[in-house]
Length: 317
Ligand code: TXA
Ligand code: MG
Image (cartoon, rainbow, N blue to C red):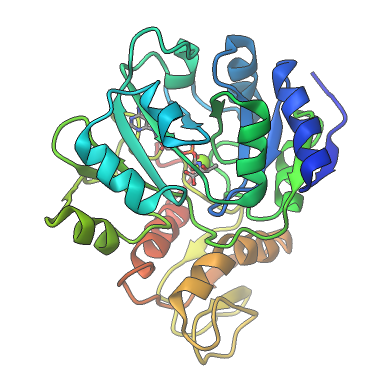
C-alpha cells in the first residue's frame, strides 16, 4: 500500500503528530541516538505486521520494544535486580535487554515473533523520548531500513529506503552514536548477543564480571543472531591498505581516500560516520568499496562486526 510519507520536525508538534499517527495504527520512523527506528504500536498486530511488510523483514526476526521509563519496562518483562542495575547505569541509552516476557503484558505476539522473551530499551534521543511520552505506550521499532540494507542515521536514509511505505518520519538530524544498540540477554547468565553503541567494557565494569559472548556468523539459527547484513549494494573489501583501480576507499586516520571515517583516528567519530559514509559511497555505484583497517578495540569492535557483515555476500544465506 503506497502512502505519502510526511517529514515531521523533531519538536513537540512533530512528536504529537507522530503519536497520533501511531495511535491510528500508522508507522512513523523516528531518530534515536543509535540509528533511526521504524515505529509502530507494539500492541497493535496490524501495525506490527506493516513494520515487517515495509522492511520486507522475515517474520521470525523479532522487534525491539521501546518504552519511556523503567516502570513501563517492568510492566512487560520479569524485572530483576540485575536488570535494574544495568537499566539504572545505562538507560536511557544504547543498551537493549532481552528478558522473559510477562504474560498478559498486552503486546502483539507478532512483535516478538511469538517468542517468550522480549528485547526492550529506553532510547536517549530527545525526540524519541518526547514521542514515547506523548504516545504513552510501547513502540516496536527495528532499524528503519529495508531488511538486509545499511541502517539509517539520517532522515534522508529512511526516505530513500521506505518512502511511500510509512506515514511519516521525524527528522532529528544525524544520529549521535551511529551504531545500533548493544544487546544483552538476561534470560539466563548475561550474554552479549550483539556488540553495539554501548561498549561491552562499560557493561562489564558495572556487572563486575565478563559477559559471555554469543558467537554469531554462519547460518542464522535463532533470532538475535543478526539476520541483516548491513550491506551496501556494492561489494565491500576490508583491511584495504590502498585503493585498487575502480574502487572507492573509505579511510580511517591519515590516509588518502574518498571519504574518511575519522581523519584523526577517533573511533567514536568513525562509528557515528560509518553508515552515513557507506550510504554516500554506495550511491555512486562503485565497483567495490574498500575500507581501511579499523582498530579492533572499544567501539572499533562493533564497527568491525558491522563491516564483516557488510563484506559477506548477499547470497551467503
Ligand atoms: O539501536 C537499536 O537497537 C535500533 C534502534 C531503532 O533502537 N534498533 C535495531 O533493531 O537495531 P533491529 O530490529 O534492526 O535489530 C534488533 C535485533 C535483531 O537482530 C533481533 O533479532 C534481535 O534484536 N532481537 C529482538 N528480539 C529478540 C529476542 N527476544 N531475543 C533475541 N534477540 C532479539
Ligand atoms: Mg536492523
